Amino acid sequence: MVRKLSERTNLGLLAVTVGLFTVMSIAYSHFFTLYNMEVIAMGFVQEAIMALGMTIVIISGGIDLSIGSVLVLSSILVGLFLKADLGVALSIFLTLCISGSIGFANAVMINRLRAHPFIVTLGTMTAVRGFALVITEGHPVTGFPESFSYFGQGYLFNIPFPVVLFIILAIGFH
Image (cartoon, rainbow, N blue to C red; front, top):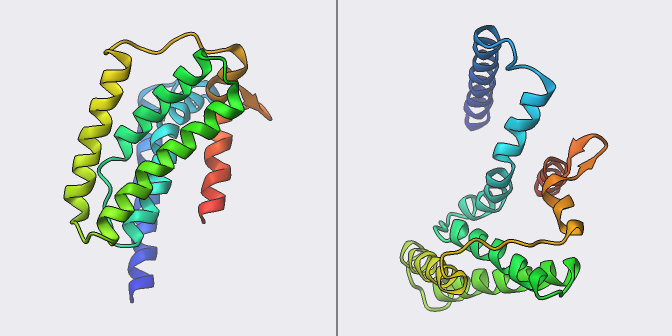
């Protein structure tokens, strides 16, 4: 029964998506162009990658309100590490370690201290967002090396690298 409901829901979502694409293609002749599909894909890829991680949390019955703030802090940390000439690989590694530590701290507070996940992640969200604001003083982090721009602007097999990364992660999460 649940499987049939899930299949019906998936078919419904597919029908709505196809319907929207059809209407938009009729209304705007440039909508269904390769360039526009690339723009749309690049517009959602960051949130889609975050959603993969959130899916694990939600499937396990949890909630994490801090993921957006951790993403922002991670972006800032990579930028600051790159500006300090730590190199792309080390900057990403250190940022993953710090971000993972934040997630681990949430897990400890929720599982060991039996604190409510909503309260813990709400507090983490606020603290991480505040820390990000303090370390940047509200200014954008700029001056990334050219080698790092590939992660956001590069192409692999004529497909934007962030989209390729999402596809690989989605397959891995499946």
